[in-house]
Length: 195
Image (cartoon, rainbow, N blue to C red; front, side, top):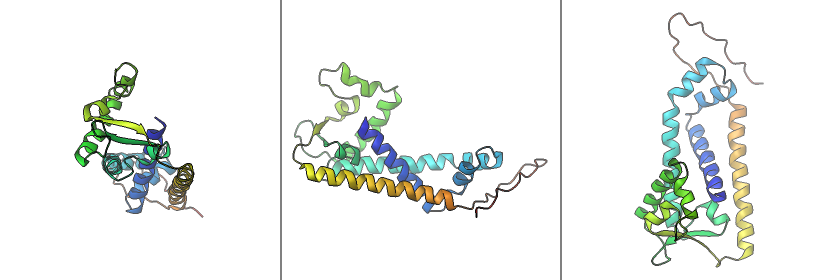
C-alpha cells in the first residue's frame, strides 16, 4: 500500500502540473484561493469532470507503461524493490495485460478494498487484480543497495520539485475567472491582486 500511496501522489502531482501548464487550471486556482466564493466554486465544478478525465489518462498511461518497461514496476514499487511479473514465466507482462491489471486495480479499490484484502484469505496470497491477470508482485533482489539509495533520493527530489512547481504556480497566479452570473445575482467582489 505504501507503493500505491507514493504512485497516487505522483499521479496527482503530474495531473496538476499538466492541468496548470496548459492553462486549464485558472478555475482550480481561483477555487483553491477562495473556496467560499460561490462564483469560483461554480466555475471549478464546471471543469471537475475534465480534471478527472486528465487524471484517469495519466493514471492508466503511468501504470500501464511502467509495468512494461524493463523495470516492470511503477516508481513506488521500484522504491520498495518490487516488480510485477507474469505468474507463469516470471518475465515481463504484455501491454494489454498491464492495462487490464490497471483497470482491475481500480475495481479492487472500488469494491471497498475487498480486492486488496483478498490476500488475507486466498491460498495464493494474491490480490484480486493480480489473480485475474495471472501476474504476481515479487521482490527484486538483483538490485544493489547503492542503486536503491540513489534512486530513492532522486525520486524524493523529483517529487519535491514537482510539489514546489505546483505551490509556485498556486502562489504566483493572479486569477480572474470570467463567469456569467444569472440575472439578479450580485457580482461578488473580485479577488485581491497578489503583490
